[in-house]
Image (cartoon, rainbow, N blue to C red; front, side):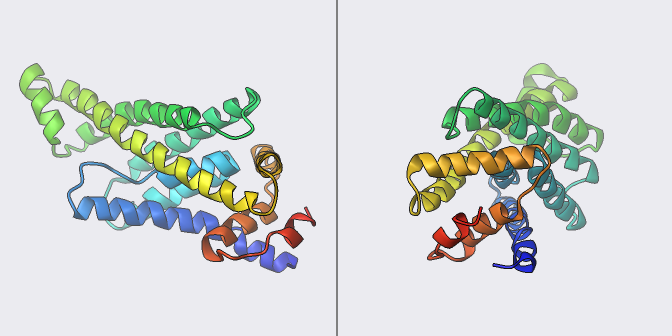
Length: 231
């Protein structure tokens, strides 16, 4: 695989992840599912590539949803908080010796995202006078305070949404790891992904890493061995 091919496939996984976020978010909105469903791929990318690719996915996701008229531009900040928080949790998990990121770390990333999004997202929604959800309406009936209803209801909704998103992200992470393990042992696969993630966390993004992850999604029978031997 030549240098040009690496640079072509490098952004494809990022674009694919953004499209997944956007498509599932729109589907949830059109089917009246009371969840946002716009950040699971952001969390997944953070677990595999660190902060830089996840922040790109975050901006592409909510930037596109803004252009489609589905949210205000300021809500990009919520996605960026998800990318930043998830990257921090996964980096901390690796420093604590997790060769293979655990479900607990994913759920912690989801909880942190729910906390930040629940506060700031609810304040943004209140500022722009978004319609209250059913949960928020119930809390408003009890508290008779719109801000409290937005904050409490928004946090509860985000907690459910981000827990679900973290679980899906964990599934995506395991799917890619399983694909790697077809070519190497479990330890070698985990170590290789960990090394590539460290490079991305240090700002040394390896296009080959993203090429291989991208091929995972688009070429299920791709032969990994010749690529790995060149890393």
